[in-house]
Image (spheres, rainbow, N blue to C red):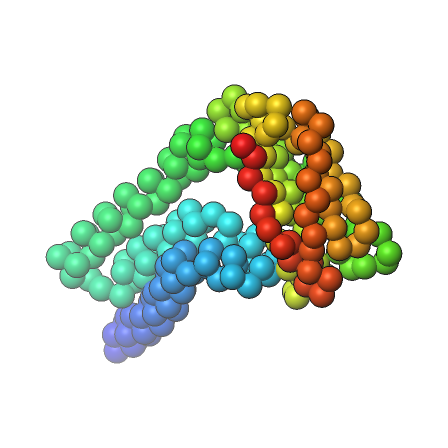
Length: 205
């Protein structure tokens, strides 16, 4: 009697945990699909940091769904194929991150942060990366602070030529940036005084 009760209790616990993991996997999968779009459309810094790349949420979804199936069913016809697919997905995501991503991704590193003049709650961020052998630069503006902070991409530079190599970024007032390339060309980008969103995005070359 005690053994039967213990078995039923364990099954109930496993099923409850499996349902939680399954729900988490679905949420992570949805986040993988719509997270980047939501981050771009809202400009929220917290979402951009979480969903700039899809592979982390994809990896989480695969792990959680595989674990959920392991707990929710004892049927080999369902259990084995689903876990196998999830395992392949996990291996693929890890391989992409460790092998392919360093070759195709920029691996951005922040190299500069400058607050806006005039006491405005806004600052510019300069990041550097590389595409194979070509140096890359990305310039962004962060407006506000806390969970409501928004980040806006201002410019992207590819330094394979002098007109695409970023030399300097400076503030020209609280609502304007001056971006200068290695060939001496200076471009002014104006920002929305209320949100900090740039009127346009630069891409060189």
